[in-house]
Amino acid sequence: MFDKILIANRGEIALRVIRACREMGIASVAIHSTADEDAMHVRMADESVCIGPAPSSASYLSMPAIISACEITGAQAIHPGYGFLSENAGFVQMLEDHGITFIGPRAEHIRIMGDKITAKDTMKALGVPCVPGSDGGVDDVADAQKVAAEIGYPVIIKATAGGGGRGMKVAQDEKGLEVAFRTARAEAKAAFGNPDVYIEKYLQRPRHIEIQVFGDGKGRAVHLGERDCSLQRRHQKVLEEAPGPVITDAQRAHIGQVCAEAVAKISYAGAGTIEFLFEDGEFYFIEMNTRLQVEHPVTEAIFGVDLVRQQILVAAGEEMEFQQDDLSIRGHAIEVRINAEKVPGFTPCPGRISQYHAPGGLGIRIDSALYDGYSIPPYYDSLIGKLIVHGRDRREALARLDRALGELIVDGVDTTVPLFRDLLQEPDIQSGNYSIHWLERWLDRKY
Ligand code: ADP
Image (spheres, rainbow, N blue to C red):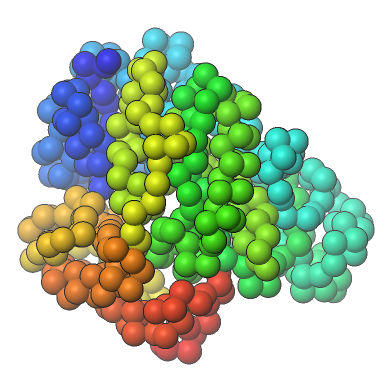
């Protein structure tokens, strides 16, 4: 087992990893930018190293600075968290060259899944059902029109290098296709340096259902059921729950097995998420994320497992602590993302926290790097905490969430907390009757 792990991240996810390390008796090293000198992850880690100025490009994304920090502190492995360098195959390769272990999958798998066209081809070949669309990339308007006519409108044009909900354009008919195609390519080129796009059928009212998988890197893999992440704004998740309110045990067992077998076949190592759109009882693969997800705690709650601990074990060459038969679901869990943002525009709201009080009691988990007097810097994303509740069933989880949100105090900045309290009053949320478009329509009506 490792003696020391460096966490190449900040905020709540850095704390999450430090906590797992501490329980495993592993020393932790925090890295931070000059803007994060007073951040909680720096305070909580056993050691810390300042790796550069505030902009992420010069600090949390600076591979040479991070590798130097490893060498100075003697850390043997790096946990990347999510975002930043977590899905950067070049970084993983560089670590390998320096004899540092990456806590995550092999570079090859990150590379395959990081390119959505290759990912889809690979998944199709592994027997995973995909959204109907172009086989591979689409290079010109004429080609796009041909594919769209075949699969039928509306269609969505997606960047193969896309991520974070960017690089997607919907075309309702042939008239709109040319503009959508050209804008998607231009945006993809500007945002990701790669203009390649592909086409998919645009599903009208799907749910976003993702399957958590975990592989030992030696050909064995399990699934840990699904998360329903349909409540989205601009393709960004806002609330997640597990199990999915409309997924049956038989559907879970079937798609779970398909996913576990797919990742077992490629000897995938560590945590991964296979994302699907789900409509009329059918699953359609959209992408795979080769890292720990923001919303992993809802899965941890209902399965009673520590996913970060398993990641560390597998990276160290040890066995994961469960097999498929050991995994069963207990109760229902919901996570809400608390962002420092002003609703309804969702404009970021950095600033000083004048008062912070976390809720407590049965079935409550808070993953947050906030504290009284903390100043949220303007340089990074606006997620300041996650509130996760666990109950015996969905009704209890919803009641507990409302209760916990009532106890939570975050003064000094605007947050998404009032939005969640409003949402919980909605009959559709109470009954679980929502697709990926529900939230945006509700926001338009409400504000
Ligand atoms: P990203 O990597 O940017 O997150 P994804 O491929 O995971 O992109 O898609 C993000 C979201 O975009 C999905 O959760 C869904 O809301 C929407 N989306 C993607 N593909 C389709 C599609 N074919 N039909 C309808 N909505 C889609």
